[in-house]
Image (cartoon, rainbow, N blue to C red; front, side, top):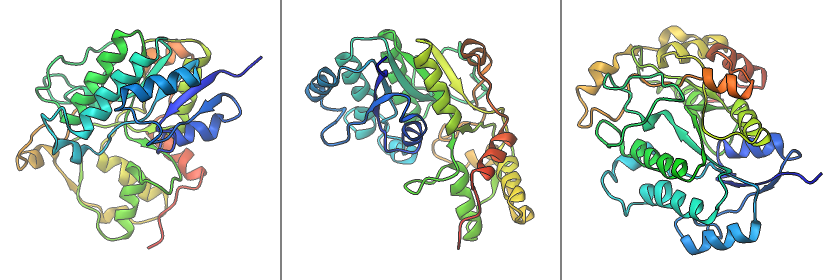
Length: 300
């Protein structure tokens, strides 16, 4: 039996590369790269998809720098909107099958008291950009495009892995600041989750193998930045007592954009676990797995 052919965009990134690494013998992966594969080029998307003729497409590619995206707020000609919205529109238009998986985020929701998380798979994202970051709005609009074409959404949040030289994730970035003596106070009143990238890859595999469609989540239970990072530092045998805490509620009072940092984020996974017959680890267990895989304090 021939392998399922999966076209993966953003295959060299933090999450996509691990999916390829873990399941390279499982699927027939096709991983086109920029500039030969430019999602903002509609003609090119049709040509590539027609030539590859994949069974599934998994779209990791996105403009993910939230700070840079905020500088483009309101600009639909900016690179963030063009990549995250128009790029998805071009790719789904070229691929007529519903076997399209869009990697998304809890930031499609406001993360405030108007619609607090953690969010279930059935929670409906707002139809207005009010209370969203511009990044969140671009991912929100991309979800709408995919769902209108019958595709699938996999929302993730703060993806983490033990090693990846090209980019620091939420945990390794904090550890780098810790050893450099640059650790800023961490919020004790912001609700977040993390997603173990190995489990993201496993979830994608289950979706494809079971020919599942809809909205799925991959995340741990909720924690706070202060609780999470101090736990990791302590588990690595370092002094977590030097890490200071701060209130996001007070911090947001000093910001020109009060929506920049969602306060009540996170993703529920109950329906995903039931549908895919899987289980997601607690954030403490994710940390244990990562340490077991070699997560350590960076060298100064």
